Length: 196
Image 1 (tube, rainbow, N blue to C red):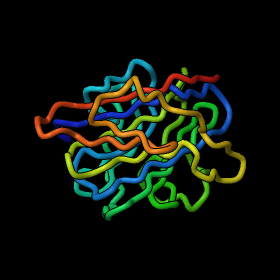
Image 2: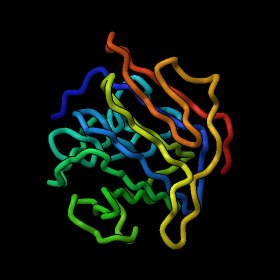
Image 3: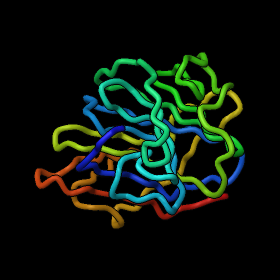
Image 4: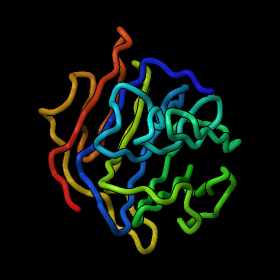
């Protein structure tokens, strides 16, 4: 079981209900509880990705883990972490494809190659959002909704709302950078544009 605390989360309101959409998240220098994936509007912003039944993603806890369901699903991929790791997130009609540095992981954590063909999670319903978590003052989780997508996918796209964020979340172009303050309180941000 993973025990995580003091995480800052990012949930963007640029949504997708169907079709193929793609974004990436760059993790500056990974520390435990940093990660990314997708979430519904019911996911809490006060916990890490995978911290409840409404978010699915990759989370650093020693190595990269596939997580969801309040960490009830927690699969070690065995992939070591490094500075500037990129988490690849592809979403298509209820299927979530998660990758690390361009190599996708299947539902058991094994390598599924360099294109999103073997889903990490299936049967996800409802409107989903990009979702990321950070837990440190000196590190950044950079969400890039305009990353070049794999064949058959569209960029997640959109803009972000600079007035709907905590002071410790910095907006730089189309990227969101979350830095946790020294007091250890979670920090959050949302976008305003949605589509389905």
